[in-house]
Image (cartoon, rainbow, N blue to C red; front, side, top):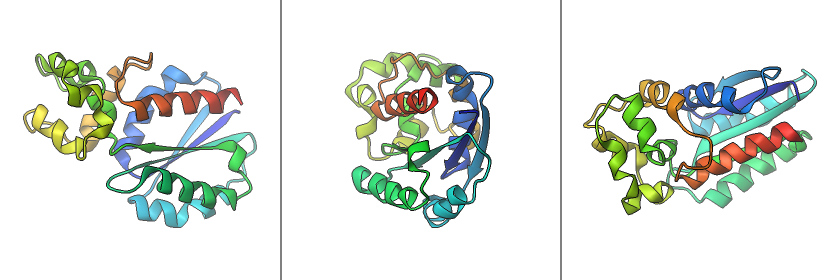
Length: 187
């Protein structure tokens, strides 16, 4: 693979990937980002974008939030769309449970460093931060935890460079994202 195209629901996901992909990908991989205007826009245009991609040696990463939907159903619907493109073996789908902010709550040291807050990382052992994917509204939780300083795009730019990809992040969906990207690269 020499090209990775990231098809994303929102700009904050792009900002997060801009920071973590260089930690995972070899420098020979070219990354392109296609950011949609929400999950409905992503789902509406996904098939056409993948089918129309003509650059050889390209793999795709499709990423969106679970929000209040059924994670398995969302992923299966996206996979069914991708199957119609005949490029399904070159595509990985990842769902952030429930929102991208779960990734950040899984690494409160990154939040502390990125947002320049004090002692936030001491909360990591609380049960809700040990399993942040189970939180119904991680963005709201992160906003409360940060004293209302967290903003989606700027927060992603600030926090993501500090995210650890070594398996210590307590967000299972973040770990699945990292392993999915690594698997996509190997294959």
